[in-house]
Image (cartoon, rainbow over all chains, first blue to last red; front, side):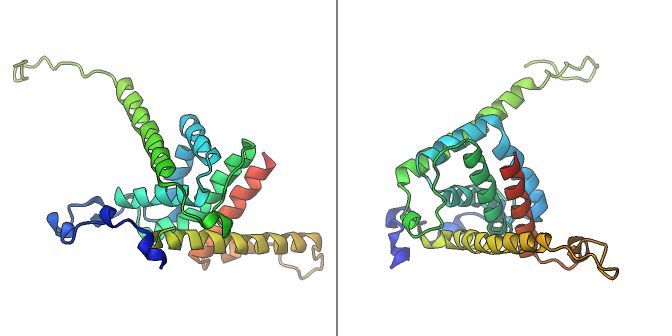
Length: 164
Length: 72
């Protein structure tokens, strides 16, 4: 049976869902992007970003199917509370189309993951490493943005707090 | 592929097939433009915008991306 391929030790512990209050998790909150258009505006500029695109193309070149990549990204979006699962499923074909176009333009070999030959589970290690490297890109970008912020000027009022 | 990842993959596979068919039919329609006096002047897409389904919207975006990526 196909669904027994999931490793037992990676599965959540029974009752784990009740360890947090209802509404504490990001996906239990109202989503940030409610329509496909809003979600596209979030994803496409990120995918087209130079740093991100280079890493993504490296991963595609390693043989990770594009459909798996898109699913991992949109699943991450759902877990962060960016959009709903419905939007994620509708978003997948669009992201696959975009990533395929990028791979074609970069003239690299790619697997789409839409044929029976591609249906084999991609190597878990490769996929994990790939997603970690993509996440690293995100973090680096955020770090860069933080550095660019100008320092706050100390307020010189009578009631302002002085350094402790 | 694990069971929880099937819907997205299936959506991609089915919509890509549909897009291929859609692009073929649109190309065929372009080849034979009707020039009669009673032919509608407005493009059909604008008419359908209000009642268009989400799947159709996704297909339109996919078509636009595919066209723009192949022309660059």
